[in-house]
Amino acid sequence: MDSVLERIGELGIVPVVKLGDPGEALGLGKALLAADLPVAEVTFRTPAAEESIRVLASQVPELLVGAGTVLSTEQADRAIGAGARFIVAPGLNPRVVEHCLGRGVTVIPGVDSATQIETALEMGLAALKFFPAEASGGVEKIKALSAPFADVRFVPTGGITPSNMSGYLDLPQVLAVGGSWMVKQELLASGSFAEVTRLAREAVLSMLGFKVRHVGINEASPERARESADAFAELFGFRVREASGSYFLDPAIEILKRPGRGERGHLAVETSSMRRATAYLLRRGFRLLPDGGASPGVEPDFAYLEREISGFAIHLLKR
Image 1 (cartoon, rainbow, N blue to C red):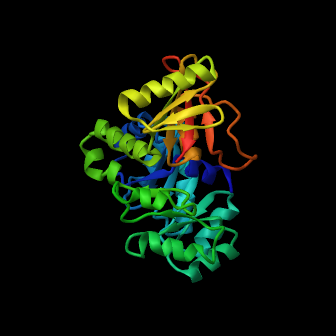
Image 2 (cartoon, rainbow, N blue to C red):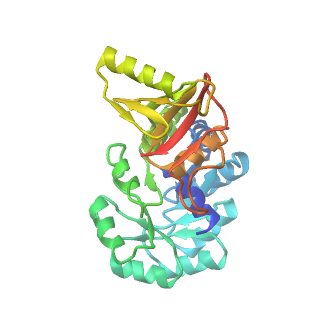
Image 3 (cartoon, rainbow, N blue to C red):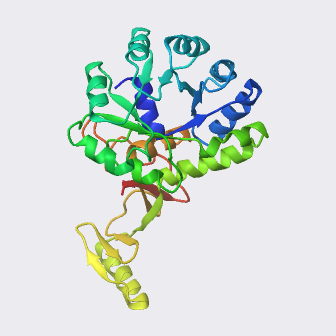
């Protein structure tokens, strides 16, 4: 999988943008950066698309900019010339696909059937837009198509909303989803970029699904750990379960028999996707320790942040 697709997979959500005025582009780009969602697919459905892509590519270089609704090789050339790093099409047009591949640009054509997927595979494509997602059968249709096409990764677009987004992103066959609810044209036209940031950030955090699983408390010895566990059990009626290195108490306390990571202990935070969460934390300036418990190239089941917060190590876990 090429670097652009890898990046899209890490981001998980691709805002699909219809811009009516290139003057809106810079505000949009800054709003998405502020939301920790540095990607935009600018659709070629308005005369402003080409210049908007040029503004974003030149003035917001941190943003991964692509062009959507590309219907011809001429549009593809205009988009690429303006700085688009990927091309998205609503359907599978072999001429457009071959043209983009010939130019060395990532292309994600739309499909909704097994026949179209076979054609795309013959052309050497690894990721495909599933469009229109909800009208074409949604999550269940992707599951059905993935049975014979296990190596294909999909970018469902069309009818994706905050309420159904997670159902798609939970599928291992889904690279990312495309949606427009956080970048509606009326928000851009009215200059409501703070609202764009709020909606986009809300989408990112919803996708990642961060939730505290348990608090780990360091104790100096197995005896002290047992005393603490018994005290919690006596006071609150928590059930005690002994493990090799700690005691677990319902609902969310772990008492370590020996001092573990962190000055005081650790906070275990679970996420829907270690891959996307790791990329998000790196964008936020948090480095992870390189002991995530997985083979090279395999998504880890856990990781620790390099930095402690309030004396607690942060233990990131896959839900």
